[in-house]
Image (cartoon, rainbow, N blue to C red; front, side):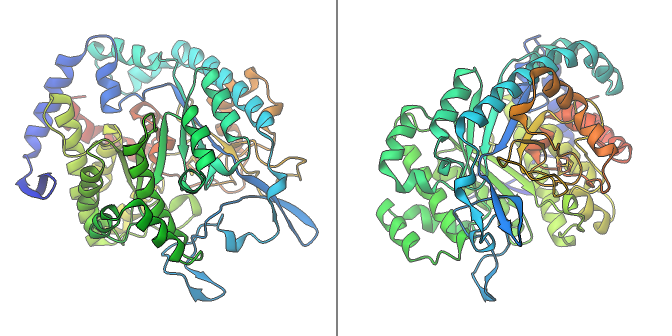
Length: 497
Ligand code: SF4
């Protein structure tokens, strides 16, 4: 395997045996009962659960009825009125697709905060129950070594909860700053996953935002045209980027997002107290050839500070076939090996090529899925039949809140449904979270998805969004039996169990 050890320098990757031996022995040495090694590798997440909430759910009136949709201030579509935009995917929240959306129907911040606080309490109750009722069975099922069990228990007892504000540009919600303040006041951490438009363009908002910033700002990096495009955009000054944004047609939302992402990175370098930057990077047919170089350039231009969260394009949750061909899968295979090496280097204290989001279980699973026929591997890395949030108690520790299922009755206020942002047919609850008490939320976290899925007409085929499976514990609890066996084989090769 050819790898690049630092920006632009070619070096040979280590043999697999070195990765394996390095991992197993370093993991055994590092076990100290605190759980920090497991968290550093992403075997257990830094915090028991996340809440991912779509703040921009609105009502859309159409032919006398009212549905819930997500409203975005960008237009990521391939065409508008039959004219190509330059974009290479279509997002259902795009501006041009949402005529009739009533932005004034947004649920007020106080209502959203009420639901969030009750959800945070419910998660903490569910955490206690998981530790008491489920953890021992998990240890036995996954043959977790005795020496590591105290570390698992310590890491899973972490009371931290992350709330990820989501939904196009969540900072366009008029009460977003009060929502951030309320969440942080409850002891939870806030991540803001956004295009960044309002932060870049509204100076007054920026000042208020920096007075009480979220801990992390999440940006998309799949809209860059190439690794060279990253260099070109980062070489421009802030005013030149602003000019480029203005001359980019509104129809080409993807290009505008790429420019905004660079503007946000430059602001992060200039403004004291700016949130840490995380890049979500969807690996697809268009960028896999260049993917390692893309991560190198992003690392270079952010001084290695930005956290990089790459993952292959997901298709199964929509009932679609995998879209990666044989060559793409070969590239993904090399990429997975490099990601595993980064985790190993981090564990053994050697310089790591990228500041990856810690997810060793995820990359071990990728390694396992990529063996075998290309057709099957393409579907599997797209999520088909591999991991399902509704498989077992504890599989879904990322609690998503957003739009109603299509079959749901009309609501007075839109949004607030526990369920799934990506697939509304399987686990989405008809009730709204501001009407649920702590006990009900705790039950939903541990059991709700399984109950909803059991009664669903169409069950989601699965997904491998890293945020959804969170860490190796949730990942392993949600694996189908067909995937668990190859995963355990590869895990044993690297981690020794
Ligand atoms: S979180 Fe669950 S319902 Fe949503 S896409 Fe993944 S497996 Fe499907």
